[in-house]
Amino acid sequence: MTGAAPRRALLVEDNEDHALLARAALEREGWQVEAAVCGEAALERLRAVAYGVLVLDHWLPDMTGLEALGALRLAGHDLPVVVLTAVDSATLAVASVKAGAHEYLPKAGDFAAALPGAVERAVCQHAEAAEKERLRAALAARNDELAALVERLRELDRLKVDFMAMITHELRSPIAAIEGYATLLLQHGPRIAAAQREQMVATIQREASHLARLVADALDVARMDADRFSYDFRPFDLLTLVREAVTQAQGKSARHTITLCGPEAVVVVWGDALRLRQVLDNLLENAIKYSPDGGPVEVAVREDPARGVAEVSVRDHGIGIPPEHQAQVFERFSRVRTPASARIPGSGLGLYIAARIVAAHAGRIWVESGAGRGSGFQVTIPLASHSAQEGT
Image (cartoon, rainbow, N blue to C red):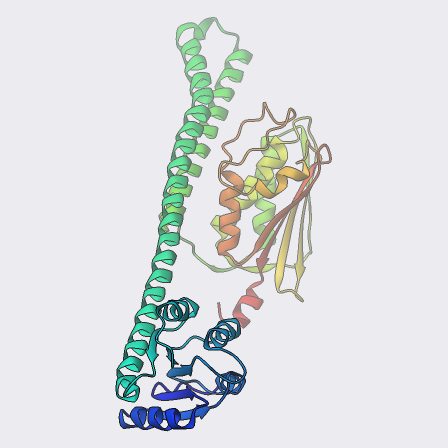
């Protein structure tokens, strides 16, 4: 179809005298009139040209006006329509309007004089209907947006409730342990064996560290939600960062053997070393925590210049993650609830924060695991050379 011509009219009339009168009346009002003598010819014209109005005689050689209106609707044509008829019938007028006509004009007396007014009314009605439909669609879209916003607000409320419930639950245990051991040390310290006192102090330190981590995670999530979680991107050696994280993690668990495999040369990536260290610490902490019987934890770093990324993997041989839970482990407050993990503490925030940090680096994080088969977490980070080529 060619470009729209709002003052172009298609006149479908097989009576030559009526056609001449109608054409003259419309042309006097500035319409450019093209004519057809049957319904099929009119449909063919409409497929090729955009018209501002259709003036349609009801009685045509090949079809009635109602049949033509039905064919128009099936073909998807949407334009103002004035139906002309030699019979002044209220029934036919109603049927024509229901079929899609905007005006109905009997060809009685000087019908041509009334035709331009009927055409203008049809054009106005069509424009009003189109505007109403546009407003209806806009209102429906706005309602959908508002419904989505309401649902988002409800979700935020649920998250707040879940957050407070999680904080309350997670704080209760370490606070009770710290308070209990501190009370024992204050009241009975001199009478407690030195080895037992050291164990109590170590427990207090461990629980205090857990509290500090919990508070730090909660603050990080709050900053992320408020878009106030900042990054300092610059090139740095990922291998050195991983080596430092492994050394610290190994010092926290004598029952695990953490090995690191990586290239001899430096692996320079583009990112925030502090934030990525946070990711590594979380993955290593989880590897230790979810392999409670001890055992090996394998960490590997490799460079993939073809993809422009460095990849870090952290694999344990612990309880693993069932396939049906793997899609949710990076969601906020997500905890894998299985008999094997029921007694393992956690806030469900660590992997969520890690995923957000990795995403901010244009990287990927995913897990490969199975129940009882351990878990392997992979992280990719853009190489500094690749980021420089892309202008980041």
